[in-house]
Amino acid sequence: MKKGLIVLVALAALAAGGWYFYGKYRHDHEPLTLYGNVDIRGVDLGFRVGGKLVEVLKDEGDVVKAGELLARIDGVPYQREIEQAKAALATAEADLRLKKAGYRAEEIEQARATVAQNTASRDNARRIFDRQTELVRGGSIARQDLETAQTGLEEATQRVKVSEANLKQLEAGFRVEEIQAAEAQVAQAKAALETAEIRLADAELKAPADGVLMTRALEPGTIIQAGATVLSISLENPVWVRAYVHETELGQVPPGTEVLLSTDGRPNKPFHGKVGFVSPRAEFTPKSVETPHLRTSLVYRLRIIVDDTDGTLRQGMPVTVTLK
Image (cartoon, rainbow, N blue to C red; front, side, top):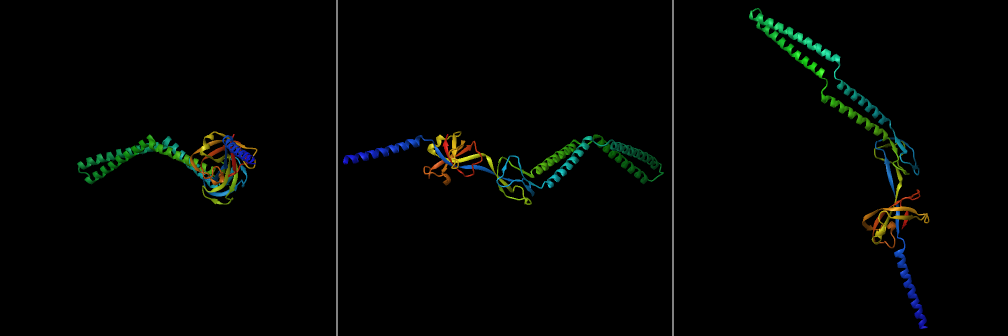
């Protein structure tokens, strides 16, 4: 009886030991399994300019493509800005052409005629002054008459100088600095026109990438400020999985490691992905992905890029990660 009992105890001990070593061997040799959640990026969309929202073309749940028009605000005020900018540019360009061409030939001829007229007046004033000088010497007129003639000669001489200077300016044309200033005005007007065209283009809101419309925050008729969120979309790509690995297993998942990603909805049809990022900092496991093995442990965060997503993965969905 005692022998039978001893045999049973020995068999039980052998079975327990075998099960322990089998479990240890299995843990050491089975593929690494991690747990994480789907991480999908979202974008809040708004206009860079303010105005009246006149049209929203998509509703929540609609699939959108990159570059697709989603909403518009009233573009009439911005079209008027373009018209004003074009008029200002035309004015600046006309002024530049005028300065480069110089003064008109008629203006130059008129200035020459003025010089000739003032020269004749000066010569006549000089003859009068000379005659008055002779008469004063002979005592025929008063000294005051000579002074009056001298003043007239000086005024006529100054008028000749002024008219000659004006003729010289007209013949020389505009200064280099004036032409450069006109060129700067043209450049400024062109920049204003480009800015107005950009503002008009910004009156249309387009999808930055493929995705699904998640939130329609505002409706047509709303007066919105620049930057206010109108729509929110969830991007189709990239789709990531955020997982965590224990320090002792960190060497098994370097960047570039190929993995399989299984969800509760399709456990037998895993997605494929690659480890794209391993955090250099340790942290405590988030409760959303906590497992008995990792509980209260310091782990490292992984970012896994999903290669073959089909649109069924959703933000926050739990995922099981195994090495391929």
